[in-house]
Length: 268
Image 1 (cartoon, rainbow, N blue to C red):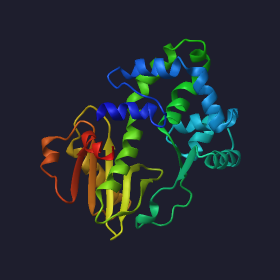
Image 2 (cartoon, rainbow, N blue to C red):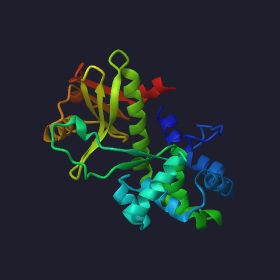
Image 3 (tube, rainbow, N blue to C red):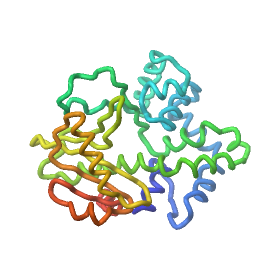
C-alpha cells in the first residue's frame, strides 16, 4: 500500500498503466518528463494557458493552500485572485475548503483564510514540480526537477495521504455515518482531520506519512490543540505510515483508533 500511495500522489487522475515495480523517479522521467509537450498541451486544454491561472495553481501546490498565501506567491491581489479561483472552480480544477470552526465553542472567526484543493493528484504534482521550472524540463534538463522532488517529496506525499485518510474515515463509520468532515485551522495551527457523525460525535485526527513510528506525543499534542480551541472530541483517530510506538498501541480503544498505510487498502 505504501508503494501504491506513493504512485497515486503523482499519477492519480491519469489514465496510464503504471508499473509500480519501477522506481517512481524513473517512472516520472519516462512517463511525464520525457512526454512534457504532450502533458503540457493536456493541462492547457483542461485549465487554459493563462499564466495567471497557472501561477495560482502553482501557489496552491507549493504552499499551505490558504488563499492569501497562494495569491502572494502568484503576485496577484486578493480580488483578482478570487476571480481566478472562481474560474478554476468552474473548470473543475479547484475546490474551496473552509475551516471546521463551527464545531468548536469559540466565537466566530470569519476572517480566517479559506484553503484551496487541486482536484487531482497529477495536477497538483504538475503545478508543484513541473510548471514552475518548465523551461529546463522542456529542454531535457531534469536536474533541478529531481533536486526539488527529492527535497519536497515527503511533505508533498503527506497531503495526499491525509486526503486518503479522510476518505477512509468516511468509509469506516458506516453505522454512524460522517455528516461533515474537513480540517480545522486558524492563525495558530491546524488539525488535519475533523469530522462529525450523524449522531453528533466529534472526531479529530492526525495523519503522518513519515518513516518514523508515531509516538504518544502526537496524541498529547492533538488533545491539547483540541482543548485550546474548545473542540469537544469523542473519538481520536491516528494514521501513521510506519505504525505506532508500543506505548501508543497500548492506548488503543474505541475512543482512540489507530490505522496505518495498510489500512487504506479498504479504499481500493
